[in-house]
Amino acid sequence: MKDLRTIIAQAAFVAAVCSMPLSADAQCRSYAKNKWVPELSPYKFNESFNAAQLAPGEDAEVSLTFYSGQEYRILVRSHPILGEVNWKLVDAGNKIIFESLADDPKHVFDFKVANTQQLKVQVWVPNSEGANNMMHVGCVGILVGFKE
Image (cartoon, rainbow, N blue to C red):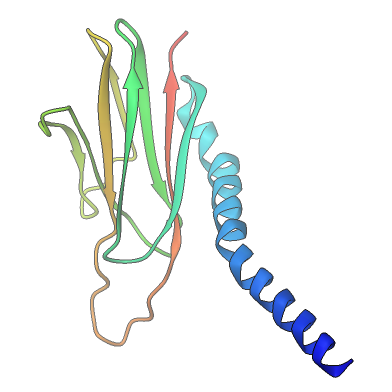
């Protein structure tokens, strides 16, 4: 009987540990939608939404499709625990269309595309300064809006 309780307890522990990243990701997505979607105004949120938990020194990239003749706003925000993040929008040839650096942050970029195309948003969190800083993980969100 004791072995069965131990096995059940171990299985419950493993299940809890495995579900932690899913829970953190869901919290990040919820936080980003609640806090940052209003910043897209007057653009309409197109439900194109990406968020990730990142730590200093980590990066993420997402490819998005933009349609000809449409006006867009890209919004990139991070949780205050991370501070400002670096991000850029690049075309298929990795030509930089827009770039925002943490020391001169710009959270939004408005643009219109002439031709339907795939563009990439690349985000990276600057390394923390100082050896005694704790490593913090925070939510970074990339939201897209369009004009009707």
